[in-house]
Length: 483
Ligand code: URP
Ligand code: ZN
Ligand code: ZN
Image (cartoon, rainbow, N blue to C red; front, side):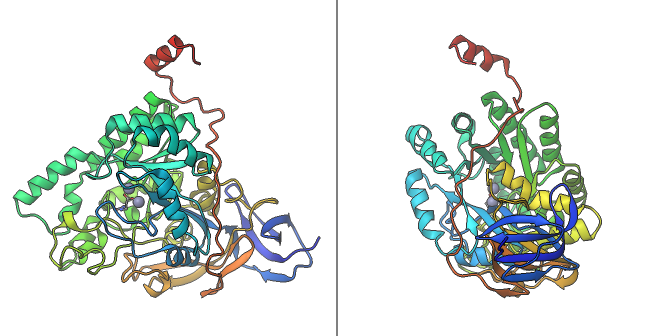
C-alpha cells in the first residue's frame, strides 16, 4: 500500500482502548492501522507518544457579534490557529442569528467569515427569533445543508426565547433529527438579582457571580429538560456549572430522557475568588454561567468521571481586556455591562489532559471520548473523532510528559490575556493534523490559511433511545392518528 504519511511506533488511543501500532494515511484519510506499516513518503516517529484523534471543539464563539454588538477578538483565522495549537483538528463555532435576521442570511454571513479557517469546521446555529418562517422553512433548509444543531437561550434580553419558543424549537428540531442545545439560566432570577445588587451599589466584577445564583441554572436546566420531554426531543445542555444542574442531567438520563451535557475547564479551574482580583482584573473572569467554588469543582469532576458529561468544551468567547471588549463601557463599568465570556480554545485540551490524565483522574481513553469521539457522535461528524480506516486523518500526537507553563503567547489567539496564565500543565500536543496535513509541529504553525473545509453533519442517531413517553402528547398524537 502507498502511504503519504505513516505515524509509526506510538501508542494509539481511542475512546475504548490503547495499543501500540502504526497509522497509514493517504489523501487525507486513514487507510490502514496495523502493528507495523512500512513505507510512507513521510514517516513520523511517535515513539513514547500518545496518538489520539484530534480534538473537536464543540463550543466556541468565533467572529461572532454578541447581541449587544461586541465582536469576539478571534476570527476564523486566529481562532482556528489557536484551536490547532491546542490539539484540535476541527471545531463547531456558532452562527448567531440576530433578531429580525433570516437563518439563510446568518449562514451566508458565516460562510464568508469561515473561509480562512485552518481546521475543518461546521456551525451550530444560535436562534434568537423563532418566527414562523424560521421554524417552517429556514431551519429545515439549514438542517438539510448539514447544520444539524442549534443553540437557544433561556436568558439575556435579546436572546431569551421563552418557554413557548423553546417548545417550538424543540419540536422542529425533533421532527428533522436536529439537536437543540440550551444555555440554561433563569432570566427572572438574574434580572431580579441585578436590580437588588444595583440598589445596594454592588456593581464590581465580583458581584457577577452573585447575580447568577446556582439556583438560576438548576431551575432552568430542570425546566428545559421538562420541556424537551414534553416535546419528545433530544437536548444538549451546554456549559453546566453547578452540581445541582449536573445532578438533574444525571437523573433525567436515568429516567430515560435523551439529554446530553458538557462542562468547561473554567468551572473546574477557577472560582469566584478570581472575580475578586484587584481593580477591574475580575472582569477577565466574567462569563455566564459564572465560575463557582471549590466544592462545585469537585462535584463537576465527579460528574466528568462518572459520565454525566459527554464532553468538556472551552466555550471560547474571547473579549479583550480593553475598550474593544471587556472595558467597552469604560474602565469602571458595572459587571452587568461587561462582556460575558473568556478565551480557552488553546487551553482546553492541555488543561484537561494535565488535570485529568496526568493527575490520575481520567484514563487517556476517557480523555479522547470527552474531547473528540463523543462530540463527533452526538453532533453527527461522521468522519472524525476516531482512529480507524476510512476516517479523516485528524490526529494529534501528544507528548504526555512535557511540562509547560501556560503563557499568553502559547495561546496563539488575538487575546491580551489568558485566564489559565501561569498554570503548570503536563502534556503537550506536539503534532496536530487536519485531514492528513500537519498543521502544527513542535510549536510551529504549518497550516495554510483556508485549508479547513466545511463539514456537513448528519442528523442525530437516536436508535434505541425512545426517550420518556409523556401521556398527554401521546394521547394527542394518537387522536390524530400519529404514532
Ligand atoms: O459567558 C459566556 N459563556 N459567553 C459566551 C456565550 C455563551 O453563553 O456561551
Ligand atoms: Zn451560553
Ligand atoms: Zn458559549
